[in-house]
Amino acid sequence: MDPLIYGAATNIARDVRDGGLTRCRSAEGSTAAKIEALLNYLEGVVFRHGDAAVDGLVADAPGGRLPVACRTGCAWCCHQDVDVSIPEAILIARRRDAAHGPEGRPSGAPAHRPAPLRVVGRSRAGLPCPLLSEEKTCSVYAVRPFACRTLLSSDAVLCEDALKSAVSGKADVYMKSYGVLQLVGCAHRAGINAITRELGLQHDDVSLVSALSQISDDKDTVERWMAGARVFTPRAGP
Ligand code: SF4
Image (cartoon, rainbow, N blue to C red; front, side, top):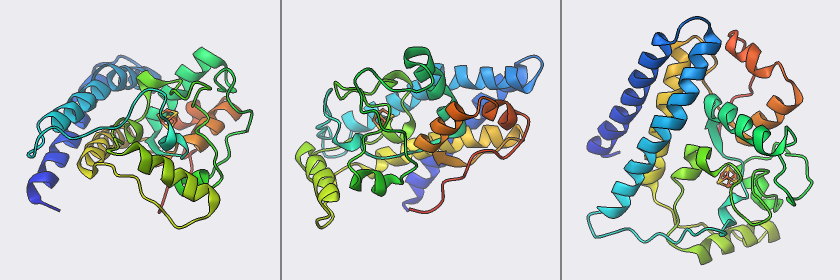
C-alpha cells in the first residue's frame, strides 16, 4: 500500500480512537455511561467525519470529481451482510427497535428471519439486508454502518448485474466501487474498535445481520458485552 495512504488511514483511526477515549473517560460512572458517550460520539461526530472525508475524496479526486451512480431507491448492493464494529451494531439495533420494534422489519419488508449468511452467501440467496425497506431505502440510514457509507459505485448497471449473476449462479460480476473510500470506512471502524479495546471490551468486527439477531433474541447481550464478556462471534475471512 502507498505509504501516504497507509499513513492517512492510520491517522484517521488514531484520531477517532483518541476523541472517543476522551469522551468515554470524561463520562461519569459505569461502563454503561461510557458506552452512551461512545454511541453519542459515533453518531454525532464519527459518522459525520467519515461522510465529510468521503465527500472530499469524491469532489477532489486527482482526475476530477469521481462519478457516483448511487441514488435513493437503488439498493442492488443492499443484499449482503456487512462487517460492523460492535458499537455500530448496538446503535443500529436501538434505532431499528425504536422505529420498528425488535423484529426490526421495516413495514412491508420480506418476512424472512435474518439468516447469518455471509457477504457473498446473502447475495447468492437473493436475500436483502433486513434493514432494507419496501421502498428500497435503508431504514436506519442516519446510522448506517461505515461499510455502507463508504461503498459508492460508479456503475449501477454493474451492481444490478453483480446481484443477478450471484443469484442465478452465473460467473461472478463485480460492482465498481472505490477502494480508497472503503479504506476510509475501515479506518473509522478500526478507531471505534480501538476504543472498545481500551475499555476492555470485545472489539472484533462482527456480522451486522448476526449481531442484530443476537441483540434481538437475547436481551442481555449488550449488558454482558459491557461486563466484558465475549458475546459476539467475530467476523473472520471472506
Ligand atoms: S444497513 Fe442499510 S445501507 Fe447497509 S446494507 Fe442494510 S439496508 Fe443497505
